[in-house]
Image (cartoon, rainbow, N blue to C red):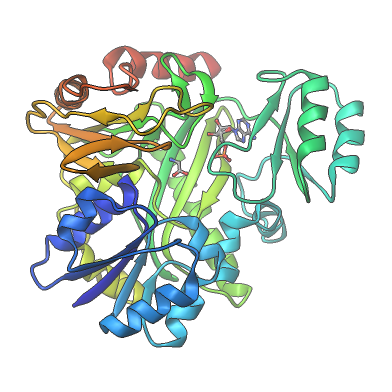
Length: 428
Ligand code: AMP
Ligand code: GLY
């Protein structure tokens, strides 16, 4: 089976690895920078912008590709699925109109409101910065400010936490186009991802990501510094009932999209804030999370290529999807100065990774050396029977790396997990 993977990050390395476990898979990959891990798995690599839809479609046709797995959001927004499907290539990923669930935050909130889907925070959609500034000026208390479009996870500012009123206004003034203002949700965040075939959803283990750059959840927001899962595929600060509600919100959203005439297929990523009033939707993504894909795909015991076929043929309902009952910890290494002023072009050397899985991200091989670029470099996944075991594996691998990169030591530690549990207990 000839499969095209679009994207060149850690997430796509995990997707490519999971697909390659099936011996019948022949992998072809498109990415902007040559990811050393994905390249090793691929028959052929096309280096080009991931949003260059005509070039990617031409490459796919030349190579006789049957299926495509779209990693990142930007090609979805550029209509890559619509274009590939028009030449009979089946895709894991939604068409452009359905990907709006991620690419247009205004659309997402309005869809939830119109279809009375629970878990939608109080929000206001402003057409431009003037309207947003007028509202901010009159508003007392905390407020979250976001552009409606894609920002790589770095577009949110919270008035009352990161910025004061003047800072909020200055931020709103910079934003081009519509702005969402919404209530600040307080609680613990979790990620729920699901395979979706248009109507049916299969959930994956719950993951907690860490957005902030530094230990103790301080510093600026990043694409995600690392993440963990637990052996029971749940999180101790999310009850069974809350999980069921979150999954229900995702099912209702897929139903609503089908009713709009643009059925959703691919991976649906729900980012939730678990509050005292239950799970609320921070946002949906139209793809796997990065790093979350690395946690769940390292545990997947079913064949991802078979799941892919079922997603694209609408036959997920009869699929049996299983994940190993183990803990995972993912630690991302990032260049010094990331995310605000990342230093690039430095050599790094990986030492003894001791059983950790290595997923390459924004890193290049030059003359046999690994060289950093400006975004997240590579990730290590530790797996184990307990969180402690998994953390130890990931930590040792991360500590073995020599070079001007850093990572968060606290991700996956028992100490951080107890803080999360305590925080949720205090709120309840
Ligand atoms: P996003 O770009 O939507 O993934 O948001 C980045 C981060 O901003 C999230 O992981 C949250 O920590 C925070 N955030 C976004 N929306 C809200 C909200 N309504 N209340 C509190 N925090 C939020
Ligand atoms: N880990 C957050 C994201 O992929 O958007």
